[in-house]
Amino acid sequence: MTLNEAQQEVDTWIKTIGVRYFSELTNTAILMEEVGELARIMARKYGEQSFKAGEDAEKLSDEMADVLWVLICLANQTGVNLEEAFRKNMEKKTSRDKDRHQQNSKLR
Picture (cartoon, rainbow, N blue to C red):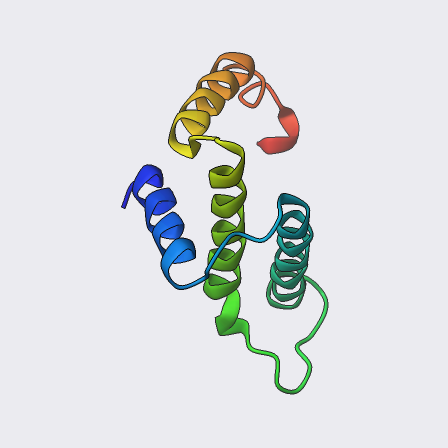
C-alpha cells in the first residue's frame, strides 16, 4: 500500500464509519497521546523500565499504526500529500546529510 492509498483508505473510513474527522487540534492532541503510548512500550521493551502487570510488549506494532493513523488524518485534513512530502523530505535529508553521518566518529 502506498502512502496515497493509505490516505485515501483513512479518508473513506472516516467518511463512512467515523462520521467525520475530529478537529485538527483534537487530532494533534490524540497524536501526542498515541506517541506517548508508543514511547511507554519502547521504554519498557528497549529501555531500563520493566513492564507492569497487564502491559503487553506485543502492542508495539499496534501503537505505531495508531500514530500513523492519526498522522494520516492530520495530513488529510490539512491537504498534505504524505507521499510527496516524504519524497521531498528524503531528498532534503540526502542532500543535507550526504557526508555528515559518514564523518561522525560517534557512529563508528
